[in-house]
Structures are given as C-alpha cells and as structure tokens.
Amino acid sequence: MTEKPKAPALRSRAWFDNAGNPDMTALYLERYLNFGLSQEELQSGKPIIGIAQTGSDLSPCNRHHLELAKRLREGIREAGGIAIEFPVHPIQETGKRPTASLDRNLAYLSLVEILYGYPLDGVVLTIGCDKTTPALLMAAATVNIPAIALSVGPMLNGWFRGERTGSGTVVWKAREMMAAGEIDYEGFVRLVASSAPSTGYCNTMGTATTMNSLAEALGMQLPGSAAIPAPYRDRQEMAWRTGLRIVDMVHEDIKPSDVMTRDAFINAIRVNSAIGGSTNAPIHLTAIARHLGVELSIDDWQTYGESIPLLVNLQPAGEYLGEDYYHAGGVPAVVNQLMSAGLINEGVLTVNGRSIGENCRDAAIADEKVIRPFGKPLKENAGFRVLKGNLFDSAIMKLSVISEEFRARYLSNPEDPMAFEGRAIVFDGPEDYHARIDDPALAIDEESILFMRGAGPIGYPGAAEVVNMRAPDYLIKRGVTSLPCIGDGRQSGTSGSPSILNASPEAAANGGLAILRTGDRVRIDLRNCTANILVSEEEINQRRSELEKAGGYAYPAHQTPWQEIQRGMVAQLEAGMVLEPAVNYQ
Ligand code: FES
Ligand code: MG
Image 1 (cartoon, helix red, strand yellow):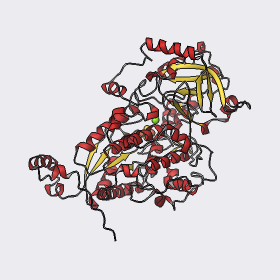
Image 2 (image 1 turned 120 degrees about the vertical axis):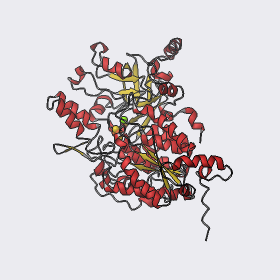
Image 3 (image 1 turned 90 degrees about the vertical axis):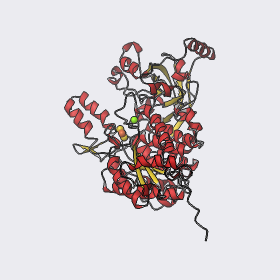
C-alpha cells in the first residue's frame, strides 16, 4: 500500500501561526478576531477558504451568489475549513460603460492581489455573467492556489404569449415588432423584460452560458453544475458540495495548473463548438491559457474545433433556453457525446479529483430535442474558421451561421464557391457607423462589405461588441437584410450574424485595417482562409508611410485612468486581450 502524500503546509500559517515572527502573527490575528473569529479557529490548522464574491446590486446576473455563499460556507465549515468572503470588482455586462470587457483585466488584477496578499489556502470562484468567469479563472491561473468555480446558474426560461423569450436575442425581435407597429414602447419593454424572469445570468447560449459551460469542460467546476438554473434547489445543493470539495482540494493540493492543461483546453474548444458557443470564447480561453503558461493558438480553434457538429439547440442558434439545457443533461451529456466519437481527452483531471472521462461516461441525454446525439447534429462544422491576409493576421468566423440568403448571394459562383469580392465601406467606431449607415452618399449596395474598425482592445478600450452591422434602410426595403461585416471588435454572444471578427492586430495598433479606405476592393476566400485588400504593394507602402506621418491610427481620448493604463499594455484579441506584463507572473 502506498502512503498518502503528506498535505502541503498551509500558506495561511505564515500569517496566523508564524512561530518565527510572533509580533506579526499577533498583528495579523487581532483584526480578524474583531468580527467574531477566534484565535483557536485561526490557529487550528484548518484551511482558510476565500469566497471571491462577484454578486452585488451592481451585478444582477451574479447577485444570487450572495445567497449561495451561505450554503458554500456551510459546506466549507462542515469539511473542516474556515470561510472568508470578500468582494470582487463588479463586472455587469449590460450595465458598464463603455463596455464591461474593459473591466475583465481590472477584476483579474485586483483578484490576483487579493489571492496573493491575504491568508488564503484555497478559493471558490463565484462565476456567472460574461466577463466574471474569465476574470476569476485568469486570476486563479496566475496565483495557482487550489481553486474551484461555482456558477450562479442561468435565469429561468423567459416566456411571452406562450413562446420562449431568451435574453439578448429577444431585443432584436422586439425592435422589429415595434417598428412594425405590433407593440408600443411599453410593450417593447415588457417583451424584453420577459426574458429575464428570475435571478441568474442570460438564459441563451451567449457568452455567459458559453463560459460557464467551458469552465466545467476545463474541469474547474463540479460535474453537472454549470447548467443548473440559479433559483433551483439543486443550485443550493451544488453550492454546499462545492464548499465541501474545496477544503479537500487544499489537502490534496490540486491547483489550477493541474486541471487546466493543454488537453483540457482542447476539450473546451471542442465543447464550445458542440454547444454553439460564443465568439468571445477564444479571447477568454487564450487569456486563461496564457496566464497558466499553456500553449494555445488561434489556429487551434480551427484545427480542433471547426469540424465539431452543433449538438445543443439553444437560442440564438436554436430554439431552447437554459432550463431546457439543464433538463436535457447539461455539459456532461454533451461531453459524453463527444467522448463517444473519441473527441475528448478523457484522462484530464477535474476539481473533484476524478478525470473528465470518469465524470461524464454515463451522462445520458434526457431530451434529444435540446441536446442532439453526435450522429444527429443540428449542424455540421460548428466551430470557427481562422482567416488571414493583408487586412489582419487573424480573424475568426463561424461558417455554420451563414444563412441561405447569404450563401445564394455571395457564395454561389461554381468556379469559386467559397469566395466573394466587394467594395469596402469603412466605419471608424460604432458612433460613426450609427451616424452614417443610412447616408445615401456611401452608395452601399449588395456588393458592399461593411468594415468596423477602431473597435479593438485599444481603439475602443476593452473592445466593443459592434462588428455585426445592419444594412442601410434603403437596402432592407429592397430585401437585402444582411451584408458581410468585418471588424477589429467583438460580437455579442447572443448575436448569430456571420461576421468576420476579432481581427488582430486592430486598426489602433496600426494593423492592415488602418490603411483600408472606403471604395477599396476586398476579397474574402473562405476556402483558403484569406482576406485581402486588392491594392498594389506600392499603394500599401504609400498608405503605410502616410499613416506613420499622421502619427498612426487616431482613436478617442481616454475617459478614465484605467483606460489609459490598459491601453498601454493590452494584448490583441488573438492574444487574449491580456495585460501583457502580467503573463510573466506565474
Ligand atoms: Fe450578465 Fe448576460 S448580461 S450574463
Ligand atoms: Mg456581451
């Protein structure tokens, strides 16, 4: 019989029980006693478990974590740990100006300081709303102390006149209904609000459901926990189980770097395709991987993810919502389908101490309308294609969301079936687009390709979700509802448009988009994965030197100190939009 390895010394001892430095120990101790903890507890040798609390009145999506923390504490206490709860900088996707993604790295940075600088032996990451999940996983990756994630869970399904209404996606529908006079402003608000019937995060397959599913696929949550709706009793139970488990993880010394290996990321890439995950996922997974020192390139998304079929039938790509996803089997059922096709690295360790293969092997689909078997997918090839050329080093596109209308108009040349050319119409940021999209002087027609630049991590600090643009009114009246869109910004996870996005480097980093002009011919070849401006090398050099003389691509002034600090050190979307110097700390 092999002896169980001795548990490592607890890092909290350096604060609360340091024989070599009794003065400091006394000082550290006394203030943690002032709200009722005892010296006996703090010097008991029990692990101190942080609860990184993302819920607050400013963060409605994650607010239910304030309740869940009570059950978490009970689990921690029962397993022999001591819980210490502390706030995380709030990130509310729908409430933060100019964009919530500006704050992902700020929350990351402050959480690193907390995890490093306070007497914590392990931590529970309370994840949920879009950017909270990557921010917390990134910080856990950097500090690399035992960590487990607890999702807050999606809202209940929204309903309106007997139909499911999903968060984010319902807004598009409500706008159309109001434009058609079917509902007034009051009706518009009621319809939109119907999609948010309870506490929890977006019930559609947007960035939140995506990132919570991927946190489970990466092995960082207890199996089956990501999809449980926020108000369900199972969610409370999962909080308690998560509390129990983190204490054992500290004793077993299971760290984020033991769980989130390259194999785990490849699993997550494949799960992302199968669930129809958001185009924000590559940005966030790259960031987490970089903070761990795990190699993960944008090309890996095409290599491992593109050919994976879409199995999950959730809005916006499909019909159903978060509750249905849970009842159908959630992440374990999806993973098991991929396992049946040999597409999961089954040996990867997860936070429960077992492998993902062991966790998911028996996970059956409970409702095939919502989660399809691998052999009967909703769509083939649901992942991302990576395009390159003189417009950018990389940008991604989901080929599976290309509509029949789009295919017929742009991709029907039998000689050249996956390529199209058009005249570039260039907008500098969302304000410019809103001001000019209906301007007849731009002469936008069905041959036009809309470009959005100045929307990347530097140009629109944090990168705006603005790449999908509508066609001008005069074209919509002629029946042309969508034009190809390309840009250096992001796209909302709840939008299903076939845009080419996350272009890196962005215009504000003087990437190829910075020298593009309205009227240029552009060629997109989806088979050969290229995107190019069709102008001569000479012309490109000429424009480059003009750009240089002008001092580079101009973008709006900083509005806050953080915007300026981040702009000075932020990586491009392809490289995870991380704070570049932070990658050196592992
Ligand atoms: Fe918070 Fe969608 S707005 S999850
Ligand atoms: Mg979003």
